[in-house]
Image 1: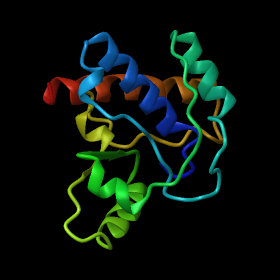
Image 2: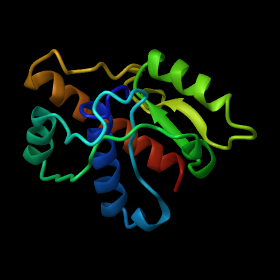
Image 3: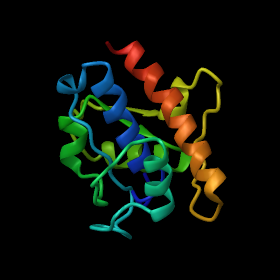
Length: 146
């Protein structure tokens, strides 16, 4: 989350690929969004797109902000770090009887790396680490929610 140009589009694209490969993509509505409105309409970071391409994954995602409706229409809203989690919980509390479970994507990591760090100021290796964390977490999430 945050600006919806680095981590979350990678997670969204990875989840869509894994769900497609498992024959389960029709069971899911998959999207990603930002907790801020900084980058609305922007393409994902070029380094993230390059990382996905190296793994044979394409995305045409455009950054958007999480809306109040998202808390009603999605079963899960998975985020990257504690700051995202508190922002989302604060937003959710303004939605009466919201249904989405708000969780850290990293809570599904079999390697127990709870936080997926923002690679924006980092290197290609940092984007690769985000990708690997997303693969592990999304696989485990899908296994837990067949």
